[in-house]
Length: 476
Image (cartoon, rainbow, N blue to C red; front, side):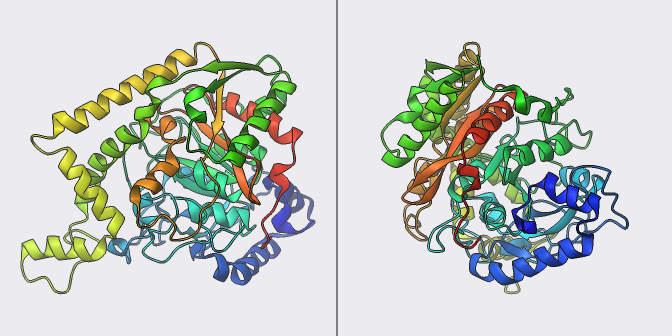
Protein backbone atom coordinates (compact mmCIF):
# COMPACT_ATOMS: atom_id res chain seq x y z
CA UNK A 1 0.00 0.00 0.00
CA UNK A 2 1.08 3.54 -0.71
CA UNK A 3 1.57 5.93 2.19
CA UNK A 4 -1.61 7.92 1.57
CA UNK A 5 -3.68 4.71 1.76
CA UNK A 6 -2.50 3.87 5.29
CA UNK A 7 -4.38 4.53 8.51
CA UNK A 8 -2.72 6.56 11.26
CA UNK A 9 -1.71 3.39 13.10
CA UNK A 10 -0.39 1.71 9.95
CA UNK A 11 1.73 4.72 9.04
CA UNK A 12 3.11 4.99 12.56
CA UNK A 13 3.90 1.24 12.53
CA UNK A 14 5.92 1.64 9.35
CA UNK A 15 7.89 4.44 10.96
CA UNK A 16 8.45 2.37 14.10
CA UNK A 17 9.58 -0.66 12.13
CA UNK A 18 11.92 1.32 9.90
CA UNK A 19 9.97 0.46 6.73
CA UNK A 20 9.98 4.18 6.01
CA UNK A 21 11.43 7.28 7.66
CA UNK A 22 10.25 10.75 8.53
CA UNK A 23 11.86 12.42 5.54
CA UNK A 24 10.24 9.98 3.13
CA UNK A 25 6.82 10.49 4.70
CA UNK A 26 6.97 14.28 4.57
CA UNK A 27 8.38 14.30 1.05
CA UNK A 28 5.68 11.91 -0.12
CA UNK A 29 2.78 13.96 1.22
CA UNK A 30 4.38 17.24 0.14
CA UNK A 31 4.67 15.95 -3.40
CA UNK A 32 1.12 14.63 -3.34
CA UNK A 33 -0.20 18.03 -2.25
CA UNK A 34 1.80 19.74 -4.99
CA UNK A 35 0.36 17.36 -7.60
CA UNK A 36 -3.28 17.23 -6.57
CA UNK A 37 -4.13 20.32 -4.57
CA UNK A 38 -4.08 22.76 -7.52
CA UNK A 39 -7.28 20.95 -8.61
CA UNK A 40 -8.85 20.79 -5.13
CA UNK A 41 -7.60 23.89 -3.30
CA UNK A 42 -7.85 22.27 0.11
CA UNK A 43 -4.72 24.01 1.40
CA UNK A 44 -3.94 27.68 1.95
CA UNK A 45 -0.41 26.97 3.17
CA UNK A 46 1.87 23.97 3.41
CA UNK A 47 3.87 24.83 6.55
CA UNK A 48 5.38 22.02 8.60
CA UNK A 49 5.95 22.15 12.35
CA UNK A 50 8.37 19.29 13.02
CA UNK A 51 9.60 18.38 16.53
CA UNK A 52 13.37 18.44 16.94
CA UNK A 53 13.29 14.69 17.56
CA UNK A 54 10.33 12.42 16.90
CA UNK A 55 10.00 9.35 19.10
CA UNK A 56 7.93 6.94 17.03
CA UNK A 57 7.23 4.87 20.14
CA UNK A 58 5.78 7.83 22.04
CA UNK A 59 2.25 7.56 20.61
CA UNK A 60 0.34 6.10 17.65
CA UNK A 61 0.36 9.58 16.11
CA UNK A 62 4.13 10.06 16.27
CA UNK A 63 5.55 11.07 12.92
CA UNK A 64 2.10 11.38 11.31
CA UNK A 65 1.44 14.65 9.44
CA UNK A 66 -1.91 16.40 9.81
CA UNK A 67 -3.60 19.55 8.53
CA UNK A 68 -5.21 22.35 10.53
CA UNK A 69 -8.28 24.37 9.60
CA UNK A 70 -7.41 28.03 9.07
CA UNK A 71 -9.34 29.09 12.15
CA UNK A 72 -7.00 27.40 14.65
CA UNK A 73 -3.88 29.07 16.03
CA UNK A 74 -0.38 27.65 15.46
CA UNK A 75 2.43 29.87 16.73
CA UNK A 76 4.33 31.55 13.90
CA UNK A 77 1.76 30.65 11.24
CA UNK A 78 -0.93 32.77 9.67
CA UNK A 79 -4.36 32.34 11.24
CA UNK A 80 -6.67 34.13 8.85
CA UNK A 81 -10.03 32.35 9.28
CA UNK A 82 -10.01 32.49 5.45
CA UNK A 83 -10.81 36.20 5.75
CA UNK A 84 -9.19 39.30 4.27
CA UNK A 85 -9.54 41.08 7.59
CA UNK A 86 -6.88 38.77 9.09
CA UNK A 87 -4.84 38.38 5.91
CA UNK A 88 -1.51 39.14 7.58
CA UNK A 89 -2.23 38.01 11.12
CA UNK A 90 0.42 35.68 12.61
CA UNK A 91 -0.68 33.61 15.60
CA UNK A 92 1.50 34.32 18.67
CA UNK A 93 0.63 31.02 20.37
CA UNK A 94 -0.53 27.46 19.65
CA UNK A 95 -3.97 26.25 20.68
CA UNK A 96 -4.36 23.43 23.19
CA UNK A 97 -5.70 20.74 20.84
CA UNK A 98 -2.82 21.26 18.43
CA UNK A 99 -0.30 21.44 21.28
CA UNK A 100 -1.52 18.04 22.48
CA UNK A 101 -1.00 16.56 19.02
CA UNK A 102 2.46 18.12 18.80
CA UNK A 103 3.30 16.73 22.25
CA UNK A 104 2.29 13.33 20.86
CA UNK A 105 4.92 13.94 18.13
CA UNK A 106 2.38 14.59 15.41
CA UNK A 107 3.44 17.01 12.68
CA UNK A 108 1.42 20.05 11.58
CA UNK A 109 1.67 19.98 7.82
CA UNK A 110 -0.36 22.90 6.59
CA UNK A 111 -3.51 24.99 6.92
CA UNK A 112 -6.73 24.18 5.14
CA UNK A 113 -9.30 26.41 3.50
CA UNK A 114 -12.70 27.05 5.10
CA UNK A 115 -15.70 29.32 4.87
CA UNK A 116 -14.77 32.77 6.19
CA UNK A 117 -14.81 32.64 10.00
CA UNK A 118 -16.44 29.19 9.58
CA UNK A 119 -19.67 30.75 8.30
CA UNK A 120 -21.01 28.47 5.61
CA UNK A 121 -21.88 24.97 4.49
CA UNK A 122 -19.96 24.79 1.22
CA UNK A 123 -16.47 26.40 1.60
CA UNK A 124 -17.50 28.84 -1.11
CA UNK A 125 -17.35 31.77 1.31
CA UNK A 126 -13.57 31.77 1.70
CA UNK A 127 -11.87 35.04 0.78
CA UNK A 128 -9.23 32.92 -0.99
CA UNK A 129 -11.53 30.99 -3.32
CA UNK A 130 -13.58 27.80 -2.96
CA UNK A 131 -12.43 24.26 -2.28
CA UNK A 132 -13.57 21.57 -4.73
CA UNK A 133 -14.93 18.16 -3.81
CA UNK A 134 -12.46 15.36 -4.75
CA UNK A 135 -15.41 13.19 -5.82
CA UNK A 136 -16.53 15.76 -8.40
CA UNK A 137 -14.53 18.91 -8.93
CA UNK A 138 -17.67 20.78 -9.99
CA UNK A 139 -19.23 20.23 -6.56
CA UNK A 140 -18.71 21.64 -3.09
CA UNK A 141 -16.95 19.67 -0.34
CA UNK A 142 -19.37 20.96 2.30
CA UNK A 143 -18.44 23.40 4.97
CA UNK A 144 -17.19 25.11 6.83
CA UNK A 145 -14.36 22.57 7.30
CA UNK A 146 -14.43 21.72 3.60
CA UNK A 147 -10.68 22.11 3.11
CA UNK A 148 -9.91 19.64 5.90
CA UNK A 149 -12.50 17.13 4.63
CA UNK A 150 -11.29 17.38 1.03
CA UNK A 151 -7.64 17.02 2.09
CA UNK A 152 -8.37 13.75 3.91
CA UNK A 153 -10.68 12.44 1.18
CA UNK A 154 -7.99 13.05 -1.46
CA UNK A 155 -5.26 11.45 0.66
CA UNK A 156 -3.28 14.69 0.98
CA UNK A 157 -2.85 14.10 4.74
CA UNK A 158 -3.75 11.16 7.01
CA UNK A 159 -6.05 13.35 9.14
CA UNK A 160 -7.04 16.94 9.77
CA UNK A 161 -8.57 19.10 12.47
CA UNK A 162 -11.73 21.07 11.86
CA UNK A 163 -14.32 22.95 13.86
CA UNK A 164 -18.02 22.22 14.21
CA UNK A 165 -20.42 25.00 15.18
CA UNK A 166 -23.57 23.78 13.42
CA UNK A 167 -22.33 20.76 11.49
CA UNK A 168 -19.09 22.10 10.02
CA UNK A 169 -17.18 18.84 10.53
CA UNK A 170 -19.94 16.26 10.09
CA UNK A 171 -21.56 17.75 6.99
CA UNK A 172 -18.33 18.00 4.91
CA UNK A 173 -17.35 14.55 6.19
CA UNK A 174 -20.62 13.26 4.74
CA UNK A 175 -20.18 15.05 1.42
CA UNK A 176 -16.54 13.93 1.05
CA UNK A 177 -16.96 10.34 2.25
CA UNK A 178 -14.77 10.50 5.36
CA UNK A 179 -15.29 10.21 9.12
CA UNK A 180 -16.02 13.43 11.01
CA UNK A 181 -16.28 13.84 14.79
CA UNK A 182 -17.85 16.62 16.83
CA UNK A 183 -17.17 16.11 20.57
CA UNK A 184 -19.40 17.10 23.47
CA UNK A 185 -19.19 20.83 24.12
CA UNK A 186 -16.59 21.09 26.89
CA UNK A 187 -14.76 17.84 26.04
CA UNK A 188 -12.04 19.46 23.88
CA UNK A 189 -10.43 22.80 24.68
CA UNK A 190 -11.35 25.70 22.40
CA UNK A 191 -8.22 27.64 23.41
CA UNK A 192 -6.64 28.71 20.13
CA UNK A 193 -9.88 28.78 18.17
CA UNK A 194 -10.85 32.07 16.51
CA UNK A 195 -14.36 32.30 17.86
CA UNK A 196 -17.45 32.22 15.69
CA UNK A 197 -20.18 31.42 18.25
CA UNK A 198 -18.61 30.69 21.61
CA UNK A 199 -21.50 28.62 23.00
CA UNK A 200 -21.54 26.30 19.97
CA UNK A 201 -17.93 26.06 18.69
CA UNK A 202 -16.14 22.72 19.08
CA UNK A 203 -12.86 21.30 17.71
CA UNK A 204 -12.88 17.82 16.20
CA UNK A 205 -11.28 15.59 13.60
CA UNK A 206 -11.64 14.38 10.02
CA UNK A 207 -10.13 10.96 9.33
CA UNK A 208 -10.38 7.99 6.98
CA UNK A 209 -11.60 5.53 9.64
CA UNK A 210 -13.42 5.44 12.96
CA UNK A 211 -10.35 3.96 14.68
CA UNK A 212 -8.28 6.93 13.49
CA UNK A 213 -10.96 9.29 14.78
CA UNK A 214 -10.99 7.62 18.20
CA UNK A 215 -7.20 7.82 18.36
CA UNK A 216 -7.14 11.56 17.60
CA UNK A 217 -9.96 12.26 20.05
CA UNK A 218 -8.16 10.28 22.76
CA UNK A 219 -5.28 12.74 22.56
CA UNK A 220 -7.06 16.08 22.16
CA UNK A 221 -9.81 15.48 24.77
CA UNK A 222 -9.62 16.62 28.37
CA UNK A 223 -9.85 19.52 30.77
CA UNK A 224 -7.83 22.65 30.05
CA UNK A 225 -7.40 25.49 32.58
CA UNK A 226 -6.95 27.85 29.62
CA UNK A 227 -10.58 27.25 28.60
CA UNK A 228 -13.21 27.75 31.29
CA UNK A 229 -15.81 25.91 29.21
CA UNK A 230 -13.95 22.59 29.36
CA UNK A 231 -15.36 20.13 31.87
CA UNK A 232 -13.10 18.24 34.25
CA UNK A 233 -14.49 14.74 33.73
CA UNK A 234 -12.51 11.55 32.97
CA UNK A 235 -11.78 10.74 29.32
CA UNK A 236 -12.68 7.09 28.62
CA UNK A 237 -10.49 4.71 26.65
CA UNK A 238 -12.24 5.25 23.33
CA UNK A 239 -10.23 2.56 21.55
CA UNK A 240 -11.28 0.03 24.19
CA UNK A 241 -14.92 0.42 23.16
CA UNK A 242 -14.44 -0.21 19.45
CA UNK A 243 -14.74 -3.99 19.60
CA UNK A 244 -17.73 -4.14 21.96
CA UNK A 245 -20.26 -4.50 19.14
CA UNK A 246 -23.86 -3.28 19.16
CA UNK A 247 -25.63 -6.35 20.48
CA UNK A 248 -28.27 -5.02 22.88
CA UNK A 249 -27.41 -1.38 22.15
CA UNK A 250 -30.59 0.70 22.04
CA UNK A 251 -30.60 2.87 18.92
CA UNK A 252 -33.12 5.69 18.65
CA UNK A 253 -34.55 6.66 15.26
CA UNK A 254 -36.07 10.16 15.57
CA UNK A 255 -39.02 10.48 13.19
CA UNK A 256 -38.42 14.21 12.66
CA UNK A 257 -35.11 13.44 10.89
CA UNK A 258 -36.84 11.48 8.13
CA UNK A 259 -39.24 14.17 6.97
CA UNK A 260 -39.74 15.75 3.56
CA UNK A 261 -36.72 17.39 1.95
CA UNK A 262 -34.31 14.50 2.22
CA UNK A 263 -33.04 12.98 -1.02
CA UNK A 264 -34.65 9.61 -1.80
CA UNK A 265 -31.32 7.84 -2.35
CA UNK A 266 -29.80 9.40 0.77
CA UNK A 267 -32.74 8.24 2.87
CA UNK A 268 -32.52 4.75 1.35
CA UNK A 269 -28.80 4.50 2.19
CA UNK A 270 -29.34 5.64 5.79
CA UNK A 271 -32.26 3.26 6.33
CA UNK A 272 -30.16 0.40 4.96
CA UNK A 273 -27.41 1.29 7.45
CA UNK A 274 -29.94 1.27 10.28
CA UNK A 275 -31.14 -2.19 9.20
CA UNK A 276 -27.50 -3.33 9.18
CA UNK A 277 -27.12 -2.21 12.80
CA UNK A 278 -30.31 -4.05 13.71
CA UNK A 279 -29.02 -7.17 11.96
CA UNK A 280 -25.91 -7.01 14.16
CA UNK A 281 -27.99 -7.07 17.33
CA UNK A 282 -28.95 -3.46 18.01
CA UNK A 283 -32.43 -2.74 19.30
CA UNK A 284 -34.21 -0.08 17.23
CA UNK A 285 -36.50 2.33 19.07
CA UNK A 286 -38.70 4.89 17.32
CA UNK A 287 -38.41 8.19 19.19
CA UNK A 288 -39.54 11.77 18.79
CA UNK A 289 -37.72 15.07 19.17
CA UNK A 290 -40.70 17.39 18.63
CA UNK A 291 -38.85 20.66 19.21
CA UNK A 292 -36.17 19.84 16.66
CA UNK A 293 -38.34 21.61 14.07
CA UNK A 294 -37.21 24.85 15.72
CA UNK A 295 -33.53 23.92 15.45
CA UNK A 296 -32.52 25.85 12.33
CA UNK A 297 -34.59 28.91 13.26
CA UNK A 298 -33.23 29.16 16.80
CA UNK A 299 -29.67 28.40 15.71
CA UNK A 300 -29.70 31.16 13.10
CA UNK A 301 -30.80 33.69 15.71
CA UNK A 302 -28.49 32.69 18.56
CA UNK A 303 -25.45 32.21 16.32
CA UNK A 304 -25.57 35.65 14.59
CA UNK A 305 -25.97 37.36 17.97
CA UNK A 306 -22.75 35.70 19.16
CA UNK A 307 -21.09 36.43 15.80
CA UNK A 308 -21.98 40.11 16.14
CA UNK A 309 -20.32 40.24 19.57
CA UNK A 310 -17.26 38.11 18.75
CA UNK A 311 -16.39 39.88 15.52
CA UNK A 312 -16.71 43.38 16.97
CA UNK A 313 -13.05 43.08 17.99
CA UNK A 314 -11.97 43.32 14.33
CA UNK A 315 -12.16 47.09 14.11
CA UNK A 316 -9.03 48.13 12.22
CA UNK A 317 -7.40 49.40 15.42
CA UNK A 318 -5.74 46.64 17.44
CA UNK A 319 -4.90 44.13 14.72
CA UNK A 320 -6.15 42.92 11.38
CA UNK A 321 -6.90 44.87 8.22
CA UNK A 322 -6.98 48.67 8.41
CA UNK A 323 -8.33 50.58 5.43
CA UNK A 324 -5.83 52.85 3.67
CA UNK A 325 -8.74 55.10 2.67
CA UNK A 326 -9.80 55.97 6.22
CA UNK A 327 -9.29 59.57 7.35
CA UNK A 328 -11.23 59.49 10.64
CA UNK A 329 -11.92 57.08 13.48
CA UNK A 330 -15.42 56.37 12.19
CA UNK A 331 -14.00 55.57 8.73
CA UNK A 332 -11.35 53.27 10.23
CA UNK A 333 -14.17 51.22 11.71
CA UNK A 334 -16.55 51.26 8.79
CA UNK A 335 -14.10 50.99 5.87
CA UNK A 336 -11.82 48.43 7.51
CA UNK A 337 -14.73 46.13 8.32
CA UNK A 338 -16.42 46.78 4.99
CA UNK A 339 -13.27 45.87 3.06
CA UNK A 340 -12.19 43.04 5.33
CA UNK A 341 -15.39 41.03 5.77
CA UNK A 342 -17.13 39.07 3.04
CA UNK A 343 -20.88 39.10 2.24
CA UNK A 344 -21.89 36.15 4.47
CA UNK A 345 -20.01 37.50 7.48
CA UNK A 346 -21.63 40.91 7.02
CA UNK A 347 -25.04 39.28 6.70
CA UNK A 348 -24.69 37.42 9.99
CA UNK A 349 -23.28 40.41 11.84
CA UNK A 350 -26.28 42.48 10.75
CA UNK A 351 -28.75 39.70 11.63
CA UNK A 352 -27.16 39.32 15.06
CA UNK A 353 -27.10 43.04 15.75
CA UNK A 354 -30.74 43.29 14.75
CA UNK A 355 -31.89 40.29 16.81
CA UNK A 356 -30.14 41.52 19.95
CA UNK A 357 -31.09 45.18 19.64
CA UNK A 358 -33.57 47.01 21.84
CA UNK A 359 -37.13 46.13 20.96
CA UNK A 360 -36.21 42.88 19.19
CA UNK A 361 -34.33 41.01 21.91
CA UNK A 362 -37.58 39.74 23.48
CA UNK A 363 -39.18 38.92 20.12
CA UNK A 364 -36.27 36.96 18.65
CA UNK A 365 -33.24 36.20 20.82
CA UNK A 366 -35.11 35.38 24.03
CA UNK A 367 -37.49 33.06 22.19
CA UNK A 368 -34.58 31.34 20.44
CA UNK A 369 -32.97 30.67 23.83
CA UNK A 370 -36.27 29.21 25.07
CA UNK A 371 -36.38 26.95 22.01
CA UNK A 372 -32.81 25.86 22.78
CA UNK A 373 -33.88 24.79 26.29
CA UNK A 374 -36.79 22.82 24.83
CA UNK A 375 -34.53 21.08 22.28
CA UNK A 376 -32.06 20.09 25.01
CA UNK A 377 -34.94 18.78 27.11
CA UNK A 378 -36.11 16.61 24.20
CA UNK A 379 -32.67 15.04 23.87
CA UNK A 380 -32.43 14.46 27.61
CA UNK A 381 -35.77 12.61 27.66
CA UNK A 382 -34.88 10.51 24.62
CA UNK A 383 -31.52 9.46 26.06
CA UNK A 384 -33.39 7.99 29.02
CA UNK A 385 -34.81 5.49 26.50
CA UNK A 386 -31.89 4.87 24.13
CA UNK A 387 -28.08 4.72 24.10
CA UNK A 388 -27.47 6.55 20.80
CA UNK A 389 -29.44 8.26 18.04
CA UNK A 390 -28.96 7.50 14.34
CA UNK A 391 -29.95 9.92 11.56
CA UNK A 392 -28.80 11.15 8.16
CA UNK A 393 -25.91 13.61 8.36
CA UNK A 394 -26.95 15.69 5.35
CA UNK A 395 -30.29 15.75 3.53
CA UNK A 396 -28.50 15.58 0.19
CA UNK A 397 -25.15 14.68 -1.37
CA UNK A 398 -22.66 17.32 -2.52
CA UNK A 399 -24.31 19.99 -4.65
CA UNK A 400 -22.74 21.95 -7.49
CA UNK A 401 -20.65 25.04 -6.88
CA UNK A 402 -22.80 28.15 -7.08
CA UNK A 403 -26.04 26.15 -6.99
CA UNK A 404 -27.22 27.65 -3.69
CA UNK A 405 -25.18 30.84 -3.60
CA UNK A 406 -28.12 33.12 -4.40
CA UNK A 407 -30.32 31.64 -1.68
CA UNK A 408 -28.67 31.71 1.77
CA UNK A 409 -31.66 29.94 3.33
CA UNK A 410 -31.05 26.86 1.17
CA UNK A 411 -27.44 26.77 2.37
CA UNK A 412 -28.58 27.13 5.98
CA UNK A 413 -30.91 24.14 5.52
CA UNK A 414 -27.90 21.97 4.61
CA UNK A 415 -27.28 21.85 8.39
CA UNK A 416 -30.84 20.80 9.26
CA UNK A 417 -29.77 17.40 10.69
CA UNK A 418 -26.59 18.57 12.40
CA UNK A 419 -27.48 21.77 14.29
CA UNK A 420 -29.39 19.86 16.98
CA UNK A 421 -26.20 18.38 18.40
CA UNK A 422 -24.66 21.86 18.62
CA UNK A 423 -27.73 23.47 20.18
CA UNK A 424 -27.79 20.73 22.83
CA UNK A 425 -23.98 20.38 23.13
CA UNK A 426 -24.03 16.69 22.22
CA UNK A 427 -21.28 14.62 20.55
CA UNK A 428 -21.83 13.32 17.02
CA UNK A 429 -20.01 11.39 14.33
CA UNK A 430 -20.58 10.99 10.59
CA UNK A 431 -19.47 7.80 8.85
CA UNK A 432 -19.83 6.84 5.17
CA UNK A 433 -22.89 4.63 4.61
CA UNK A 434 -23.66 4.65 0.91
CA UNK A 435 -23.87 6.71 -2.25
CA UNK A 436 -26.39 8.99 -3.90
CA UNK A 437 -25.82 9.46 -7.63
CA UNK A 438 -22.25 8.24 -7.16
CA UNK A 439 -21.56 10.70 -4.34
CA UNK A 440 -20.96 9.83 -0.64
CA UNK A 441 -23.74 9.67 1.94
CA UNK A 442 -23.07 10.00 5.67
CA UNK A 443 -24.70 8.30 8.66
CA UNK A 444 -24.85 10.46 11.80
CA UNK A 445 -24.64 8.88 15.25
CA UNK A 446 -25.26 11.07 18.30
CA UNK A 447 -24.57 10.03 21.89
CA UNK A 448 -25.42 11.50 25.32
CA UNK A 449 -23.23 14.21 26.80
CA UNK A 450 -19.64 12.99 27.42
CA UNK A 451 -20.49 9.51 26.09
CA UNK A 452 -18.38 9.66 22.92
CA UNK A 453 -17.36 6.05 23.52
CA UNK A 454 -20.89 4.90 22.64
CA UNK A 455 -20.92 6.67 19.29
CA UNK A 456 -17.45 5.28 18.50
CA UNK A 457 -18.67 1.80 19.47
CA UNK A 458 -21.69 1.96 17.14
CA UNK A 459 -19.81 3.68 14.31
CA UNK A 460 -16.90 1.24 14.35
CA UNK A 461 -19.20 -1.79 14.42
CA UNK A 462 -21.09 -0.49 11.39
CA UNK A 463 -17.89 0.47 9.58
CA UNK A 464 -16.36 -2.98 10.02
CA UNK A 465 -19.48 -4.67 8.64
CA UNK A 466 -19.49 -2.59 5.45
CA UNK A 467 -16.97 -1.28 2.95
CA UNK A 468 -18.27 2.23 2.30
CA UNK A 469 -15.31 3.75 4.15
CA UNK A 470 -12.99 2.09 1.58
CA UNK A 471 -14.56 3.88 -1.40
CA UNK A 472 -12.26 6.60 -2.73
CA UNK A 473 -12.82 9.60 -5.03
CA UNK A 474 -11.46 9.65 -8.60
CA UNK A 475 -8.46 11.82 -7.68
CA UNK A 476 -7.31 9.14 -5.21
